[in-house]
Amino acid sequence: MKQKEKVILATNDDGVHSPGLHQLAEALKEVGRVVVIAPDRERNAAGHALTLHKPLRADEIRPGVFSVNGTPTDCVNLGVLYLLKGSARPDLVVSGINKGSNLGDDVTYSGTVSAAMEGTLLGIPSIAFSQLGDGQFHFEAAARFGIGLARLVLEEGLSREVFLNVNVPNLPASEIKGVRITTLGKRVFNDSAIIENTDPRGRKYFWIGLNGVTWEKRKNADHEAVERGEISVTPLHLDLTHHETVERLHSWKKRLETEIN
Ligand code: MN
Image (cartoon, rainbow, N blue to C red; front, side):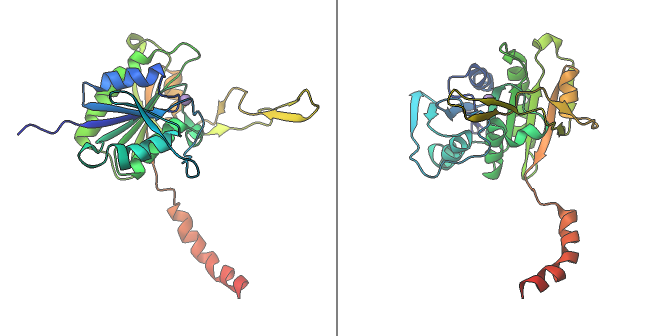
């Protein structure tokens, strides 16, 4: 019997017209049927936002390419639970290839990573892809790597509540040094990171996220891999409960209960 063709939902946070998304979608046609469901405009740093208080529209702008007036999370949610429900339910969700890195703590702000998180919440293996660079992006390496990784994930599966965050150095494919399995880096926040200025009406305003990033030294951190020219693959886990602290809080419980009555 012929195996059912795999369905891949591709999204991003750079918008439905971003070249990174189309290179990834094009490449993954080698692996299955790719349906693009992506925001109608840039939704960078949208985090895991879901639109609950305005109507969402999904326009099929080309066969198999939907433009949605929502966030990356909306796209995956609407895609899995409605547009691709039933027999077209995706076997894999991919997000990217994002223009710019999503390393370390930054994953919590990232629309790209949140889309993969949403896929994972919906029980579908998911991968986020980000390409380092500044204006000029070499998407070929990430797209080619995506084919191999998508195949492996479809064959082998991922643990429950686990998804993959991939960052690709800003190099042509031939200059990539290898693949490193990494952990999330830890950002060092310094107090010069916020720029204060005054607007033409004399009111103060602030601009965040302008200064270069510094990282804490950590073994196998994702940012170190890409600095060395390696593709970084970080497994992320959605279970945010810290189980050791559950134990610790048990010892606080008595005292907390005496405070309420
Ligand atoms: Mn982006």
